[in-house]
Image (cartoon, rainbow, N blue to C red):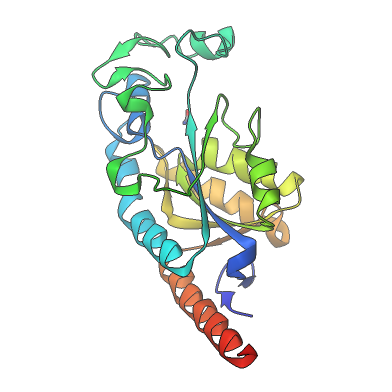
Length: 234
Ligand code: C5J
């Protein structure tokens, strides 16, 4: 089986059993004028992950891998927004308030949607989540299990918030998760480093860490294996 060179050790790649998970690549986090900037963050740090993530997305689509996207946000009436989440941070603009890309983190608004470069295409489910974790109050687990998915390739923003919260949730549900470090982004470079270190420590306590180049090389090998297997069974 094709293997992705990764830490703490190689990650076995099986295209039919794997999903590419694109976490919260929303304008609200990645561009100025959205929720991320309203909290005082420099959004340009997240943009760095978009190019590598686009390469991985295109390659996974070409390989026929299942792709699933998530978006963090709330109903327009904010009925699913906990008081604590709205009030915490004491920012001048809060979730539900109007920013330059529409109401912050509200479903249906321009800022809530995924950036053009990584926009979902037909057949790629979009999971709308009210929390940080992709599995909390969503049908993420059901969708993955219906497809027979056991392994996750994880990209997205932000590394130490929604990405690793989702990786921890996935771990507890029995999935193997591989995080691609140049395809995840944080407003805090030091948090990016420590969040990824926590994933792969202790023999991969939450999962594996690699990067887009090493993943793409293994994906090519896995595609080759599938072609050879199909030819052998003909
Ligand atoms: C945050 C996220 N950072 N998607 N959300 O509030 O990581």
